[in-house]
Image (cartoon, rainbow, N blue to C red; front, side):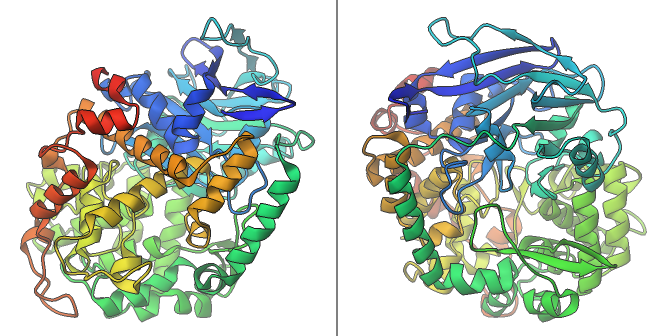
Length: 628
């Protein structure tokens, strides 16, 4: 990555671990790769396309699993400590990445690494240990660097060991994290639970007190490799290298001021967390209810943020180095635990017609322990509940049945009974029962808790997202519901593509910097570019940084095109296109998607089938990627 340390430029440094061969190789990529693709998500997308992972079965040995900290991770910049895990998703078949806070990414940076690329399959359940003294396991042989002109392994290539995980296999996420932490203090771990071991297609990877890389089934990729955990033992004394300490301190102080002045980061998120959305979306008539059959939930107030705080108490929790504190810490059953975010409250609540907050909290905890994505779990159960009301399967679950929901979560994690079908996600589950139209998903990824019939720009965002339906790729709640940074008519069909493209590209930058999207509400592009200027040692303009976001988006699009995705996949569930909402503020509306797609493709400079033009690729320096 383009950094200056002791007057010398440092390239993008990584390790390749082949679990099948028990071999590790170091690699130093040209500095230009860091400039063009940043780190985190962007670097992961570049490596996946380079590895031609679009031709590899997601659960096959050759599918890469890439851990990469963001550019700013480990720098000391506030709210910038995230890392990404990238792979081809077993749930969707698309390019995929998950992002998480915690200290794992900083620990990876302390080893001097910009990425860790893992392929192969272990012969037995295994813990991969980076750093330390090997921990009594098999220390892998360090091969020479992959590029002939690169530096040999050197200091940045930490000792890599494979340890037996036989005593951990089958244990849930909290127990696994606790066991690894007790073996040596200061370690950071990314682990899977029983769902990942058993190949549930929406299994998560967890780290740092259970923070989840939740979507797309990356935990199943890890489980297919028989990799129970990746552990980093970087010690406590070796701090990340930083350039321009005085300027960085000044920028940090500036950021703290901005975060303290912005209403979202100074009040709304610290006070209520993401669950503040429950009432807002319900009032607007865009809170999906009972598998998107409606968009207002009669029990929304009973399962929202204020009810959560009133019933379970607790306070806020933060990622390391973040002053915002959007997370919830609650007390239940004499234990302190992470409280459910909005998406979990919605998916395990309104989506399933469940208004019992205590049952939702238990369901959320069961998902976190097993390593299950709460969004896909809840919406897949909602699909089963709609089928159940039609008598398929016989004696199937019904909307509002909290006990059935809890039982199905356990059955899915264990792959038994109906849970074995639910473990495939809603698209495959619905197809098994001849009801594909009841799967509320895009490109195989279940929709989060926003009904596009009442916010059409969000529908376009879901349809065009490179990893499937995802509010993290771009959220239109601001312009369509709140009125920031500008008001858009939430029912309008056209005129939203330019802003959506801007949001998609900016989020690609944030995911690659390792910066929190919530904190970025208060931090301008010029500020983020100034941070890069300090860290890299030469001037970075905001426009240059934003071009990197567009470049990352296009690399992901090229991956999906190579994997066989077409315009036909840039769509929404039929219900959202053809079935108007019957009541509430959004009644009578559907999404008229096709003209929106045409406008979006034109804005991107793509052809009518959604393929990037030669001129678009030339502007981003990606023309050579067409042949891949």
